[in-house]
Image (cartoon, rainbow, N blue to C red; front, side, top):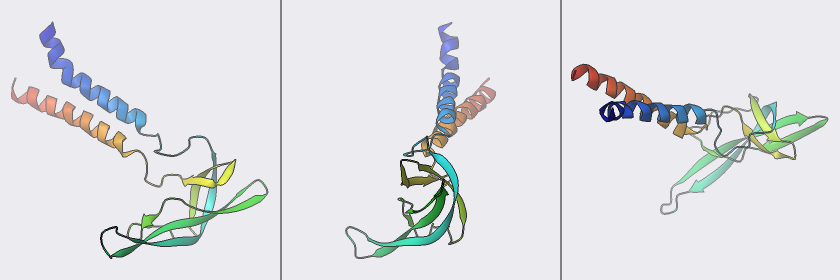
Length: 142
């Protein structure tokens, strides 16, 4: 009986890791869950120069400045997260989906901006790796 439980331990651990990963998959990191979803237009690009702490090299970081409407009011806000210019993929005129706080319309985030919680991907991969490894071990050493 105990031997069977020991043999099933990797499967149980893998199932738990995969389950945690699937649970966390759709939870955005550092973002508020309840807000109003709307469409916005990138109206400008905010640019900052950043310097490394210990070097003299500078590089540019960019963030989209968006315009959106809520009710009869129109808002313009800068996305608070700046991205290295090499990874920046927004252009003026792009239409994007945002979710903003109705109490503070300057507080918003871009839907599907690629910043979902990456730990969920790690949990899912670890769980699947354990399961696949376990199957290979069973097949080879039976």
